[in-house]
Length: 372
Image (cartoon, rainbow, N blue to C red):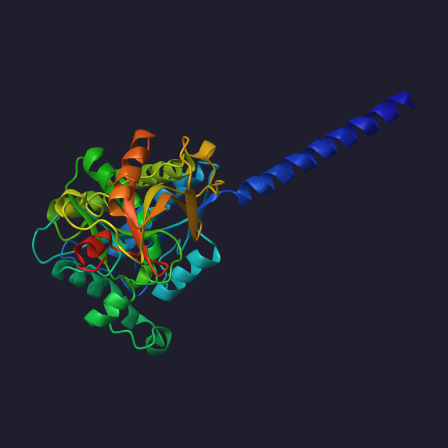
């Protein structure tokens, strides 16, 4: 009788432990960092043409699957694919997949092409700052729309060859551009640093595939399949594995930076402009200056103990991202002092931002204006 009772007790305890373990597992999965991996093109859309016999849709899919499988080895990540086979997925549905998953990142993988022997990698984020070269890339990628059924209805008259259309689609995702650039920089740094490949840099273009994704998003041009040497590299198992690892490492580093509540200055977009306008009046009526010290997925209380002793902290939420600011003043000379204070507290990559009527504006535009 006692043996039977002990058996029942042991069975109950084991069942309870199993229940708790499975419950914790469910909660752990809910907290995972969701990355949508998008293999460009597919099905009746082969991608960029090439004389070498390589198909962009096949290379993009192989690299995308390798990135995903590497990330899936890390329990902190959940990976969702827009396609796993050679099928056609509309640009609109690619974004829909990411939004439905409430993803933390959208990463679209492509190959480049050119009529010359151009080579090197490029990573694009959404934006209206289209150079002539960036516009040509945007038009080429966006023209996939014409391969879709009912494209006129789905894209509300959007014309891939129209400058106005390509600029307009960048506005909705503008809030995520900063974080997108941070990820893009890590990807390009890995390509140039770890793989010793030529990086053509980070570009902004109005790409429809990222138009309605409500999270940081990048489109990676992994190289030129039209280049004889680089095309062979992209088509090789070794090249694909190395590219996938570089992208995977960048994504992990990006998440780690968010988790550690570290702000990263965006090279080339937040220049130090204080010296140029040293002699201008310093108080700007109707304008609020703040120091952005961090961007993180963590929702932290705006208390000094969370920010190395800095007080007067405010925060804004953009999707799954929180931005943290130090100070609040209309005096530009004062905000420069606040900026130095933030840097001495360890926020070495912090920078000044400006708001007017509740909307963020360029600091340089404020300082160049004659009214104050």
